[in-house]
Structure formats: structure tokens, C-alpha cells
Image 1: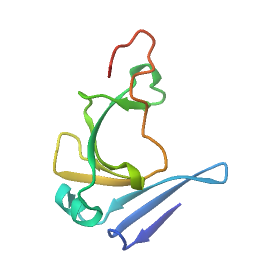
Image 2 (image 1 turned 90 degrees about the vertical axis):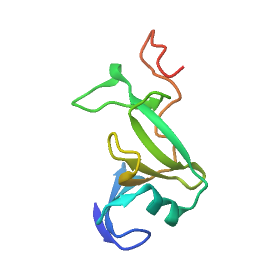
Image 3 (image 1 turned 180 degrees about the vertical axis):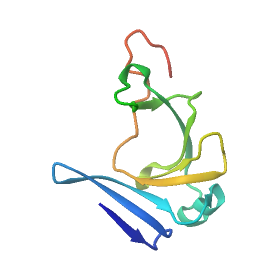
Length: 119
């Protein structure tokens, strides 16, 4: 399901429902957002988290992710609030989406057998 919203940022809010239960929401801003814009809206109590794709879990072009200091997926996260701003690939200022979730995006290490990635 998707909705046009104006708060906290104008854009399209996509709502994900799994087995009749809200699973998460992603807000795609109507106009380009920067890191400074997000901090202005949500505040300065954030962390920058990096993630990598778990190569052994790739299915149909998607993969689960795990926290990795060298990962190429970057989020500006407000974990206590369940909000994360997703940076555009290779851009430390441009935000492409805002995700609302009640759980972590991925584990703190790779689930691939024999992998030492993220440790």
C-alpha cells in the first residue's frame, strides 16, 4: 500500500504488511533530501551504520544485510525511534529514503558459513 504524505517530509509512504501485521514503512521523499535536512527534522541523536550484503543469502537479486564497518550500504539511524535514513550509494550527503522499523536491519555479522566478514 502507498500513500502521499506531508509529514514529517513530503513524499510517498509505502506500507509493508506481512500476514495482516504491519512489517515496516518506507518514505520516499518528494524532493531531494540531504543529511542536514534529516538532522533538522529528526535531531542529532543518531549513529551512522554501515551494512554489507550477505553473499550466501542472495535470492532473486536480493540479499539479507549485516552490519559491517566496511559495508557499502550506509544509514543515518535513530535506533531508539525506529527511524533510519538511507544514504544514496557512494554519497555521504544525499538521502534516498527514510525507513520506519521496529527491528534491526540485520545481524552484527555475516551468516555465511566460514565467513569472518563483519567481525
